[in-house]
Length: 143
Image (cartoon, rainbow, N blue to C red):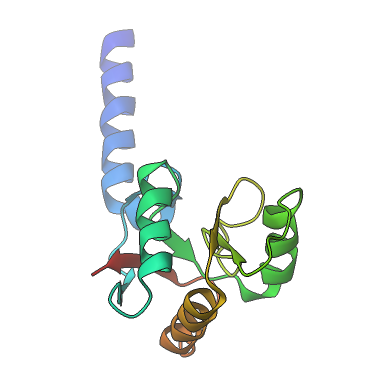
């Protein structure tokens, strides 16, 4: 009797998981996601090569390839990610995941890159995502 009951529970859990997988969320660190509503952004490496390289390197090092837009915590995330990372004359401190991502903040990957590349890339990303609300999940594909 216990075997049958256990089998029924397992089957019910599998059925639940199958039908409610979209609500179960995302494992942001491993980069796995079970949602159909991901927005894909094709980041132009020809326009912003330093930022593109940084995104690729950070993802390869284990950072999430997804960004959940969270603009209201961007300043807080930037402060956390850049804490104890000194400024360097002639360079910006670029963080990935970006400060405007829920995945950003403490533990973000930081690289020194040229201000023109960093600020141009930031403006480009901001423009691309301007019509999407907080909570939108974005996948950055670097061209």
